[in-house]
Image 1 (cartoon, rainbow, N blue to C red):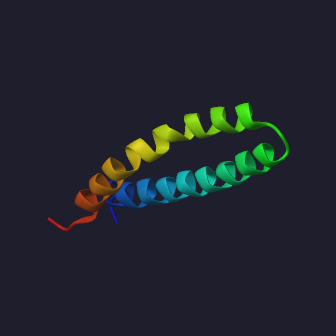
Image 2 (image 1 turned 135 degrees about the vertical axis):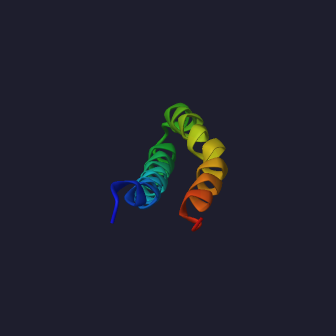
Amino acid sequence: MPHSDLLPSLLFKINENQLALETAIMELSNWVESRGGVEIAENVRGALVAIDRNEVFIKMTLAVMMTPE
């Protein structure tokens, strides 16, 4: 298998990891907020907006890359 064929699968796995980290960080921000760290939790959620904003593009690009020619 050529290395170029591995790229879409690698990017898919990296994206999965990114989404799992987003979920874990969101859970932590909820925990911090429940203990009075509202401002910190809001800052964390604000930083996670980039992941949400880019998710659709990443998924569409991966779908195109994984489609056989």
